[in-house]
Amino acid sequence: ENTEQLLAEQQRTMNGTFDDAHVAEAGKLMGARYVLACRMTRYDEVLTRQAEVQLQVIDAETGRIQLAETIRVTRHELDKGNTRAQLVDLAAKRIAARIAGFDPYAK
Image 1 (tube, rainbow, N blue to C red):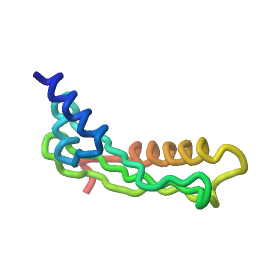
Image 2 (tube, one colour; image 1 turned 30 degrees about the vertical axis):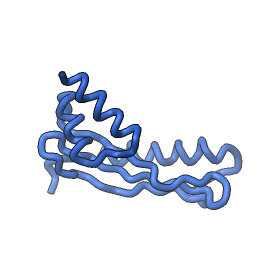
Image 3 (tube, rainbow, N blue to C red; image 1 turned 45 degrees about the horizontal axis):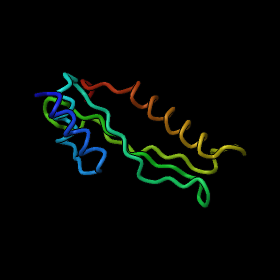
Image 4 (spheres, helix red, strand yellow; image 1 turned 90 degrees about the horizontal axis):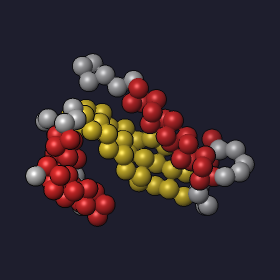
């Protein structure tokens, strides 16, 4: 039964028809305490050379958003060369750094 529910949640995610409640429900089904949700909201490697990712840490039990932040990488931070690789790499490093500092008990 959980497998079917997980597959349904995955399909909603792939279709772009999911929300925080669905993300929390999928996390709960997997036994997770928190779920990390990232959405690429802006990506341009040609004209503006920038990326923007919406980051959320969601409590799987309550559906409450514990952390919400926008991670941005701009062209001024890039070297010459492979723009796509640099945008993705810098965004991933920033996401990892922000999550590493996440404390669900801090007020």
